Length: 376
Image 1 (cartoon, rainbow, N blue to C red):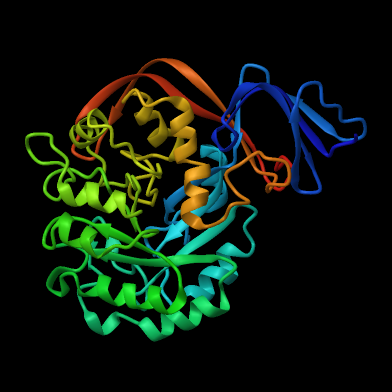
Image 2 (image 1 turned 180 degrees about the vertical axis):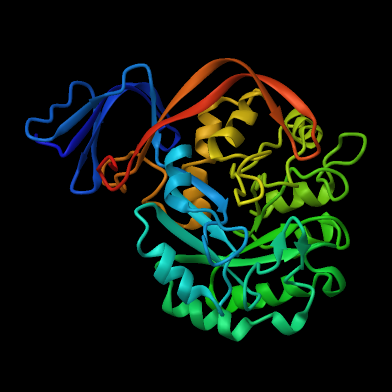
């Protein structure tokens, strides 16, 4: 069999197949063709990745990549390469009023796949900067359910859900009402909601109580106030009830939403996140979040098994997105893969409150395969 590309001799970790072994991964016509031993590529290319880890293409479920269109946007191609990400999911940078520019100028020209949770606020996240914070959900006049539904209908190939931001900073006097608007759009379009939560009001529990199976609570390991655990380390009953009915819990690290104290308590109680994401944007890309693989590395420091960390960044994220062709190296899946290494040493890893935990391992990017090809 002649393949377009073969990654040879890597440690293949693919939780979608319960696989963790040394093997070759072959690609043909933009898809995964085979995983096995001694796969030959007579006329194509091969790369020896011995000593490295090969996973399905990493999915960063929470990013802000509307570069040039919003103040928090970063350039997606450079970010994805540096973090071994093959799918960036932009979560609310654009709303229906400015999505056409996002699609034309960023999404369509980009080699990295970009999927979108469209903001229910007309102009998305428009007032986010260190010196200027205007919560786009403060003013209910900006909620645009009709326009949001219309843009979704004509862009279902890239729009995977509806984003809304709730909390004292994001929605202020509007409270929980913007979430209710987003849920109405979700019912109309058949798509899930991703809800941001910051400080109260409303409470963590009030937001969770409205979310349905398939919806996503991002910033799920945020610090007090509005943490998922009480001061005694016990998980709030509303959190357990939400997971039971199928709400997904996403990390969304960012510059204000990951706490070592919360993470330790949640992991000690056997409540890992469903998905790990960076919430990377212009104001946290240089710390404390940095990128997807640094966020993943923090869970190594929490003693989360590597296979579970990979699952939370691949097959679990694909399930949340309802994109089963992603997040797997099964033959026939989209031909995306991430090539990683794990560096041993002592690494200072900070949370959003400045607490530093010293990890002994750090995940590094060693390349990606996109659509069966290594980008040049």
